[in-house]
Amino acid sequence: MNPLVQLQQYGQSIWYDNIERRLLAGGATGGLGRMIAEDGVLGLTSNPSIFEKAIGSSTDYDAEIGRLAAQGRSVNHIYETLAIDDIRQACDLLLPVFQRTNGVDGYASLEVSPHLAHQTEETIAEGRRLHAAVDRINVMIKVPGTPAGVPAIEELIGSGINVNVTLLFAQSAYEQAARAYIRGLERFAASGGDLSKVASVASFFVSRIDGNADKRIEALIAATDDPDVQEMLHGLLAKTAVANSKLAYARFVEIFAEPRFQTLRAQGARVQRMLWASTSTKNPAYPDTMYVDPLIGPDTVNTVPQTTLDAYRDHGNPTGVTVTEGLDEASAHFAALEAAGISIDDVTDELLAQGVAAFSTSFDKLMTTIAEKKAALTTA
Image 1 (tube, rainbow, N blue to C red):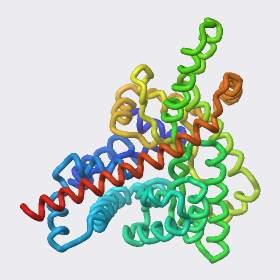
Image 2: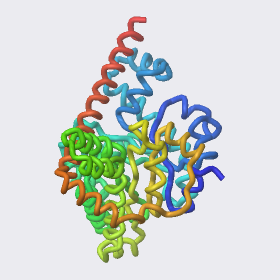
Image 3: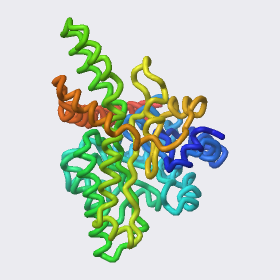
Image 4: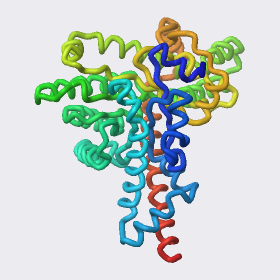
């Protein structure tokens, strides 16, 4: 059996972290359609970086850009038209999955502008607008898990809008997102909403944690001549991301076992599943499936790019639930980091700031790309 499909036996869904028009062509027999049928892909996520690559590195969108440019449409209007059309097509391809899983899977995610990451009301307004524009039952609106994003999550869930909470790095930020989801469900129930019709995932970023933590560990190694200290520090490399994720999952289990959520569950509410994001291996010295195998478990999603999808199909070997294993070791790892002078809060705070900045830069680059194509196609 395809290892990607096998993951479903242990409660984990594979979503695809990419979108481009050529993958959507051909319907059920096209690129995404084949992944759904053969690889058990059960959902799709997108972000500004993905759209920038899709639109900027191909001519697949040029005809529509030219048509909209001829109508005098703005660059932002052109972008949203292209993105919304892609997300609609993905939602339509995933609708049978949504129906078959009774709304557990089958979602495609569209992100609000990263420039709104620190603006609550503007995020709410854009989330509502994009949700209405896509007009698909199985769309999720991506909202950053920043302090300003937390009340937006609650408001959108309270309105019955599916939310993918993105850019979660810290365990504390994850808990705030989960609590916002529960408060939103309570508001939706109070307004007479059907709790079984709203869903959410909490996108907890993985590999970037190791990238940042390992950089700090390596700096400490370089700063000491003590071989014992160097050996101890070497033992901390490549472990922080998985430890962070396992401890966050343990918190997930606790939160959604509390009476407050169980009251909602009795009314049809779903848990807010944990979604492992950024699961490609950034360091070529590390195994290419190292952010899949240790994080398998119930009510989880792993959204993978093409490289990780291909790697796991080729040599993945799921043997059971792993995300609940090694919690004592994970806690001990964090204690060792702190003892060495590495603050995990500093790591996650820096990564959140970098994540917002990187997506904002990609969004701006995307707008520039569309503007250049618009100009070229208008004068052609």
